[in-house]
Length: 97
Image (cartoon, rainbow, N blue to C red; front, top):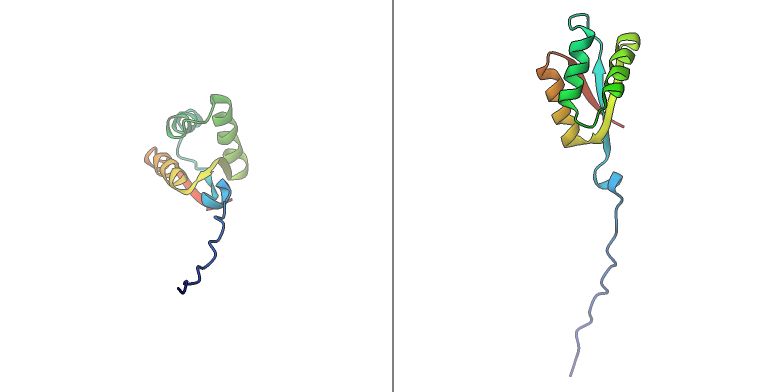
């Protein structure tokens, strides 16, 4: 009786959450069209994780420095949040963190 050699089974590799879903930054850009209250309301309705205090901080940072990171999250959520901000007439982009 002959037996066929069996290839060793490789142990499964475990990837971290950030390797599986790398974080992306949602960047809010300053504009001279929308008032500050509109920007804060748009941030709060577009990104549910933000508190009112954080939304004000993001708005002020974008106003003072030209842009501000609103949140870091996986790509699909970042695209959703960017699109929601843009639907409010704001300029937002995403970039890998």
